[in-house]
Structure formats: structure tokens, C-alpha cells
Image (cartoon, rainbow, N blue to C red; front, side, top):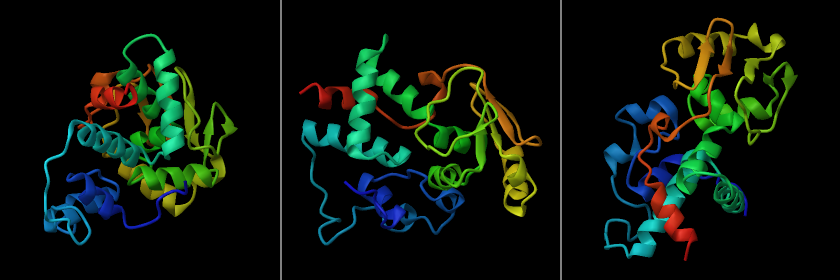
Length: 208
């Protein structure tokens, strides 16, 4: 299955809520949800009551779209979460939060997760001093994520650092926007994830 490359706003409309896939634009009156809060397509305005399965499926799709994960990738994350100690749904969200592209976004160095993913792929970030260009790379406690030295002087990253300084980072990250780096001080917990997700629905879906 190829990665979705269509309009990001279409995905928000399909889920009936803001997924903040386009960063600051989502906070303006240009947001598609603000103008057309119904599903895309010819029959989008004909709302039908979803079955239990439909509700569970929509929740899974919503989380996939928030983090930009492909179907097979998402299933692998779920299977790994099942093998871990603790609550499966919370384990799943923790694994997704620990992705390097999400960490860069949480640092404030990216207007959206998609932009953060592109920056990682282009090799602008290091983990513990080593360049990592794999968006799905899993960070761990005490890892130091930083902008690569020869990228720090660019106008792009100067602007990102200025924007990051004005943002609030999650408690599990210690961000130094001036130095363009962040350290993972703990693993993210469910309380740290400020997203409208009902992860128990995803667990129920995969338990069928």
C-alpha cells in the first residue's frame, strides 16, 4: 500500500475532526473542517450511524492518519504493543510517540508531523551524535536528538528554532531550542499524549 499523497484536509474531513495535519493552517479559517465539516465525496453529507465495527475502524484510521503510518506498519506496532508488559492500547501510543519524526515534531521543529518526517528523511537530525534519517527510528530514555551542525546555520532552521522556543514541549522531552536539541528524559505515558484517541477501540478491533 502506497503512502497517501492527496489533500491532507480530506483526511480530517473523513474523520470529522481536526487532525492538525497542516500545522498552523489548521488554526485559521482556511481549515477545511471549519468550512465543510462533512465527509468528502458525493455522499459525504449523508451521515449514517456507524456500527460498532465502523466506530472501531474509524478510530484506527484516525490514529494512522495522525501519525502518518501505513496499514502494515500500524499492525506491526500493534503486535509489538501486545507483546509488551502493560496495557496494549497505551503501549501502542507510546511506541508511536517514540518515533523520531514525532519527536522532532514534539520538539517544535516542524509545523506538522509530515514536515518533521521530511526533515528527518533529508538527514537534518542526529541521535546521540549519529545521523539518523529513518522516521520510524525509536528513541529511548537519555537519547539526545539534535539538528545536524551544518544545518543549524540555515535560515530554515533558525526560523524553526525561533518557533520552537515559543512552543510547549511534552514533559518527557527536555528541549533546548537555542541549541536546537532535545533529550528524552522519560518514556511518554498516556497522560503525556494530548490527542483525542480512544485506544481501547483499536484493541477491540484487532481482537476480533
